[in-house]
Length: 132
Image (cartoon, rainbow, N blue to C red; front, side, top):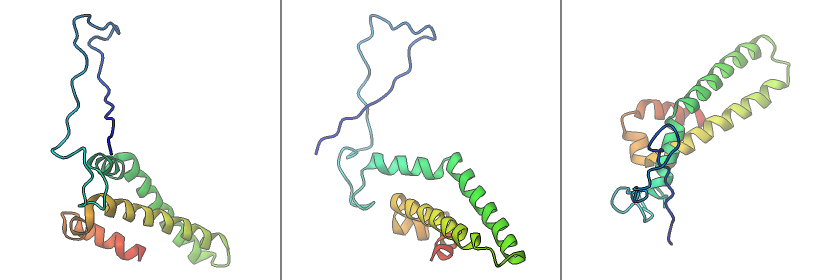
């Protein structure tokens, strides 16, 4: 299976003028074997794994998960005071779904060994045990 690699290159000047002598964009290079699927990460390519890592480890996703954790905290406090409300069950299921997606994404790009034995293993174990 062949893939096309698309790259963006910054303009040479802020005015938007492109040099007439330019020979074109250089060829994009990845790590050795980047154009072939690897079995290490469940058949994902290097580029797909890298984009999943950039998404999950990015600030936006981390802030989102932090807000979900705070929302869960407030929901637990509200459920303690008003247990008869039906909204708690629905909210807990939504939050559990978000945490499940987070764990699945991390497992998909890190792999089992790195997820459970890597540098963030304690946080990963905590996430995993909360979801399970």
